[in-house]
Length: 385
Image (tube, rainbow, N blue to C red):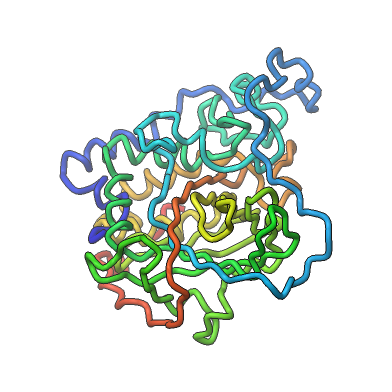
């Protein structure tokens, strides 16, 4: 990927700029209904006619297997690289779909929110006053993924095919995520399988084969003191249940989302979960899922580098419109038990990403990040927030 992620494609022409400005118009939301009837309590939950979920079982994590969480002494270490991301506009079959977001993520808040529940705003936090009434509804299996549903859909309106362009870059060797699992045994269940998470540097174009022979390097900004054994994203409580690796209990994590050879953005995720489907022989894997919730308070940190790289600056009317649109998408409460509190306004955007992975050679080298290109915005403007 030689261009900054989505907004570079989104804002590549004056026509796209104009259409984006129209899409993001703050005034377009002013006539929408108020967010929630003032019931005074949450007793209205019982009155929702279709409150019972009749769809798939909730997509929730399997529990840790019984047994002592300690090394077996016979397990092996596996390394995986992410070769494809499902951001929310494509299904698991790689087909563009407005409903693709429904397939990704987990039921983070342990509440199955139907469209009727969302319209009445019962059972969950109070949606943003200018949000549409159905914006709290869940995906398949009660999955929480407002990032995929709204933010990615907003991007796709003016950048058809952006997800394919992102994945073309990953297949060619753009910087990506790496996942290391330690003490992997052959049994279907294992109460102790710690994991480590990194960002890989860009590989030479045409050098990546994704056949298990690839040699990748770790970028030093994702480790401490230059040590591969000290990743900033460490999952010491990982386990395997029925061949599914789980990173452990959901918790706050700060990750760096690889965007291009010269751009990455911070993801501050509450209740972070990573899972990985291991093949039965536990020597390879198929797909991972990353889920969590983005605090609205961190949205500006995420948007700024992408917007600056795309050439439209924080503080401009277009950036402010983008910011004001995104902060209307929250559906969870950061820091609350199971990310929900019916007495508070939603302040987090749920996120679910699918990740196809391939095995790689054990990583032995840590390298410096690539030089950061000059900020085209300089010190222009202030944040939309």
